[in-house]
Each structure stands twice: as structure tokens, then as C-alpha cells.
Length: 85
Image (cartoon, rainbow, N blue to C red; front, side, top):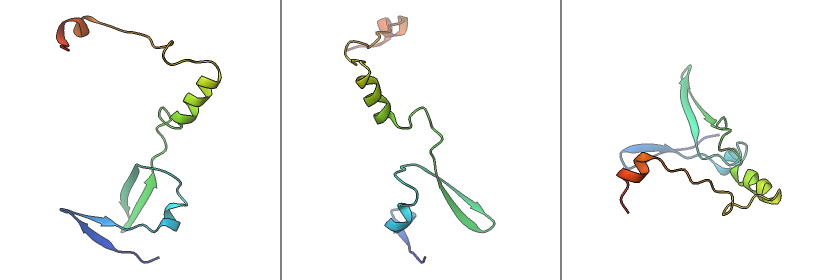
């Protein structure tokens, strides 16, 4: 598929057609590398700690977790002396 490289400020951007992006799904961060004279773009999905947060929170709430009641307050010496409000 042919596409264009365009000027974006001091950089250049690659226009990726929507039908090609749909094969990757909804990813906001990608890894770009050059390999054997080719540009390889891979979605970053390995950050499992933040992957599917919305679904995880919905599941926790469905199981009875109430965010306002289950917040743990942690305060240390830095908080007491260094922060000003």
C-alpha cells in the first residue's frame, strides 16, 4: 500500500490508512525500528499492569469494591514536612 510522509513541525509523519490500523486494534503507543532497510512498527501491549484497566475496575466494582471506601491513606515524613497546600 502506498502512503505519504508529511512534514509535522520539525519532524515528519507517516500517514497510516485506517484499514491498516484496524488490524492492530486500539493502541496509543508503538515501537518503531529499522530492520534490514525496512521500517517495522509494532504496537506496545506488553504493559500488562495498565492493560485493560477499565475492564479491571468494572470487574472490581461488580464484585463489591467501592473506591471511596477502599482507598488506603498512606502518609510519610516527606508528606508531613515537605508538601505545602
